[in-house]
View 1 (cartoon, rainbow, N blue to C red):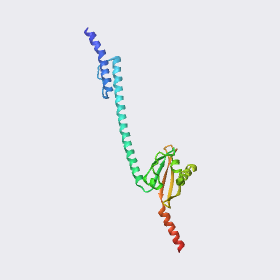
View 2: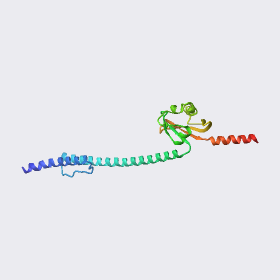
View 3: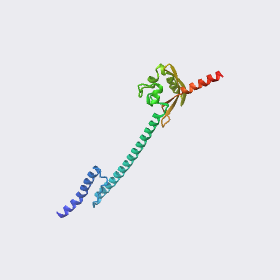
View 4: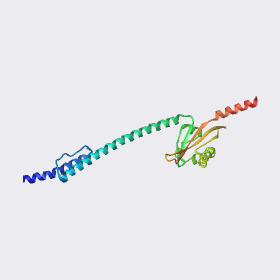
Length: 209
């Protein structure tokens, strides 16, 4: 009886240790290892379990490190995005980005003011926004960039405003993704009305001389 009990314990003890260790690992305790004297198949089973537990712990550590790196990169990307948005929002020039589907993605307050875009057209297509007769010159500038296949198209846009004309310098620049495919464009406009007026005044002064 004693010999039978002894042999039974040598069989059940490793199995019970394996069961307990498996529950500990499933609970998140990845440093769990089995220290049981065993022989033959049970020794190989215990050794395989310990190796598996070590692999799981190592993989868990790598995943956690990768998660921390990803979170850090995401935070850095968000910081840069907010910084760029702040800079674009503060500059006097109007900036409008158009995605690859031809929809308005972003624009700053200067663009709304210079182009008289009210309400804010984010999400609308460029054709809907610039297709109106008063905005036709801007639409032609964008169409010229698309049809010509050039990276950058520049021009001057004249807009009627309060009985006078506002002169805008406009530049449409292509955007490409990491593979070099077309990813939309950016339209930058600046008010050059004071410059045009100064040039006209200088020209009339020359005529007067």
